[in-house]
Image 1 (cartoon, rainbow, N blue to C red):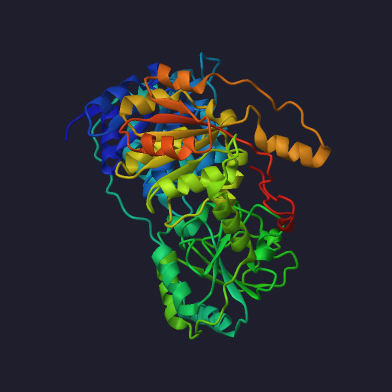
Image 2 (cartoon, helix red, strand yellow):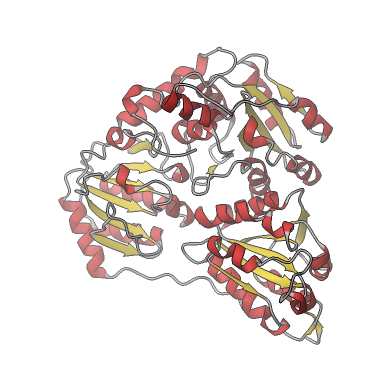
Length: 547
């Protein structure tokens, strides 16, 4: 193909990986890379903070299974990526982070903006490397994507020294290959089927891996063939339609979630794509007395409360289909759930609640009515996340995006932009607290520039609500949690974005409908009243997770 700059070959490698977007902020040390991107098929999306760009890449990876790509220059540009890269790492979203770096010849001494980026990012990526010579470009790009996208997926990082990217290179991209997955043996499969057929009260605990594995259809078929009910983690919402009689509800907030979902009486738990980072198994197997079947893409994590009797490792959807065929169990499991009854009862009771400021269940009821089966709700982190995780019902997988592993505030707005780019035909709503919203509010400009019609719903109470809740429970008072807010309507309008503030409970569904009908981003401010406990009922016990 002839000799070109290494940066041009690098971008060709990105194109060969199917990259559609690179989200980030250019720098002096990425001049050659950005120049090469300008002449490519890839859309470079300038963002207003590198963290926002990395969250957009994170969302792209979550929703497509193909690594999202973010870019920062050296020094502060790279360190600004860290939080969202760590989010992708813990929530198993494929992401490739690119950072500029100074010339190799000055890395051995004190130098302007030089810090050890490989060392800084090493604990929060699956693999990272410095592109130390032009000749390695095709190999390192292919490896970065292969590692990021292989199970369990996550973040990888490539450091691009400025002088290397400007050097000549005669090379071509390596061909892309889909990750290879193992296949469980027939002996393990039959052992699992025997355990299921012999169990008196089996149930399924479905987690994030089943979403990644596109296993919803296979899981629903398995459930309907065997009659075994399903409880879902926060990140697995919608794997089974919440209206399905076998849906036990979303577990992982209160101490008695699992008891009320039927885990206390279960003698067998089938963990399908369940990540320990979602919620500790100590909460559902405290006596270590349950038989456990693991269906996952990789071998189970070591945990004294999570010791599998059988592990079926491979493509989760395929394993579920084979297991369903091997089971002879008929539909005998009851599948009733006191947890589901309490939570859905509280949601349904809230439909006519005209209290103002708005109580969370009423806001969630209105959101559910306004969104279709395949529309997307993105939750930021805060007390509202617990309400959404507990109460917002999902019909389909991948329609409720929650940051659960790292759980960083500021997640919602940039993630919603990424989601809208992936699914422009779907409605996308981001729910943030007033604390978290200002952490990445600058990305309103990015949304306005791109025309990504995301509806930003801000639950406003001028406090860090989840910390208020926990302080009040532990100490009987709260401290250091109050703050002031700008006029969010004027702030949004300053970005050229339509915005409204609710003056009554009935304003919200009306304004939400208006906002969803627009083809531009918007903001709705909802004064919120957190005085009712997210626990809903004292029956559910103390909280067991952070926000």
